[in-house]
Length: 211
Image (cartoon, rainbow, N blue to C red; front, side, top):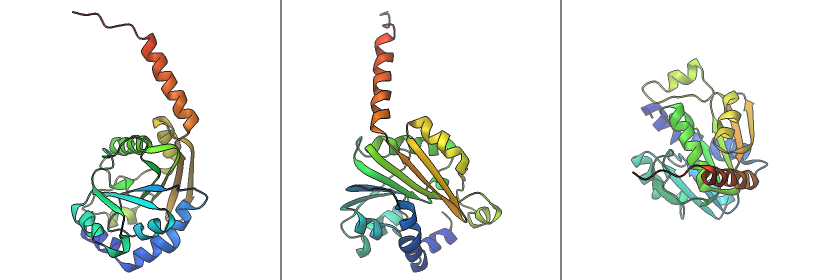
C-alpha cells in the first residue's frame, strides 16, 4: 500500500464509513456464526464492529505495522491478530464460521494468488459457512489512487466462475456504484461430494510400480 492508502485507511472517516455503511451492507442477509476470520484487516476499520456482531474475531494482516497496531488497539480488544498471508493461511481446516475480506483481494499481486486465497479461505471455513467480500472495480481513478502500490483489480463478472471452480457454492455478486459485494458459501453437500469423488479417483487409480 502507498502512503495515501495507509493514511486514508487509518482515518476516523473511513472507520465510521466502514462500520456504519459498508460492513452492514456486506453482511446483510448472512449469518456470521460464532467465529469470523477477517482477511486483510488493515488498521482495523471493520474489526470493532465485527467484534460486536460475533463472539470471536480473528484478524490476519500482511502488514507488520498494521498487525502490531491492531493488536494494541483498544477498539479491537480481545480480538486475535495474526500477521500472515491470505494465500497461505496459518489456520487449521474448518476453523471459522465465516470469512470477511474488505478491499483485500486487489492487493494480492496476481490473479493466481487471488485464486490461492480463495482456496485457502474455503479450506479454513466450516461446511455451511460463508465468505463475504467487498471490492472496487477497475478504473482510472482507482489506478491513480493505487499508484506505486499493488492493484490487481477483480472483475465482478469473473467471480462466480472463479469461486465455483475452487469449490464455493451459491456465489452471488451485487454491483453498486463504487464497488461490489460478494457472497459465497462452503456448501456441506458439495464438500462431501468432492470428497467422495476424490476417494473414487484414488480407488480407481492404478498402483504405482515399484522400481
